[in-house]
Length: 442
Image 1 (cartoon, rainbow, N blue to C red):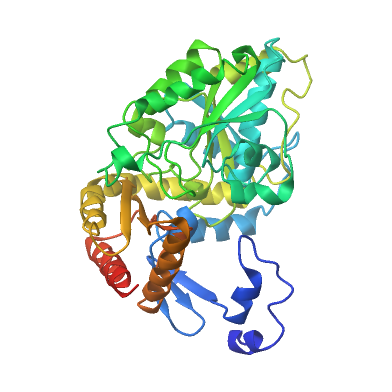
Image 2 (image 1 turned 120 degrees about the horizontal axis):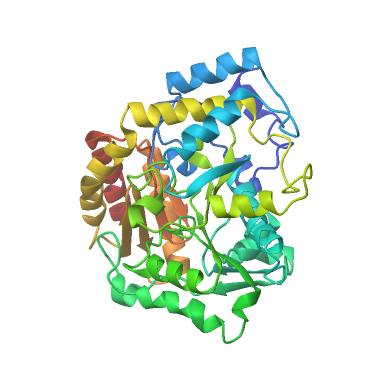
């Protein structure tokens, strides 16, 4: 049965789609049937320039032949092997390759299957680390308003996006939240990092008037908050967070599910900002989106605390997933890392960032644009005098761009952009020409 026949039947009903208005979608479905390079292909023949890298993840472009070949070859050789007391070569090989490009001192990796699992794993590692050191009273997790850390109970509890939480009650106890860094009164239309706002990090220390810092296990933040609309940290903000966490013996976790693997023109945001956390949660660009995979990169200090304080022969960290270090995921990740390094994709992202910044800020002054935020190959274009009007406008711009063959992402009242890192100057022109026309039409 071809796709059009399927769409005309009751074929859509069984699949409950994630983060989707299912009833609306199924009245007018948009079905992707293929992808190559910078483009998606739809069931009706429509071709779409991908302005969001799938969902922040297809950094090397769709269907890269080296990644495809690695997955096919591995599927034929070893489709699955458990990582529970067992092992296969590619998981070890990838762990070694990956830690060769991580910030100094972060030299171990625990594999998961997604960003949600990565952030939950990072939180559990923080708790286990303090327990191993005899500080089991450190159980509080501090996140940030407007933060997003996946949809597991741990990450969701630490996150600060209200609409994602309201259906699920109290979630986990012991989570608290720092203020976000969005300050449009002082920083609207900043080029890259905003100048004002480093002192917002001091709110963490002010929280210790309420919460005993000796009960805090970890602080978790996205270096650049992605899903909330691309909030870029002010100059000096992350440095202050690092200093406060160090002073009070609190672990600092960077959620780099979005910013890892070149999104900011460096392997990790920690490199771009020259701030080294204790743990980094990763996923998305890890395999170029081709096979689900995530992980947590940890410091040697955390690893040694858990190894050194466990009884001989004991499981040092009672945690893991059936598919941790899956053979196909490991093969995809190795091939993806080869592509990134051999083809200079991180360097390309860095070199084209000035043009990207110039083109997104050229939207300043167009109807409805109230703020523009950018760093690396990320951008957020905030619309409307209020969230409701901005959300309606963002949807109109999305619809216009879709008809013109360009895929963008409306998030509430913000248009979010995160293209494959291989985007060319011509494709940047196509993308922003469509958005410009869409803003004028809306």
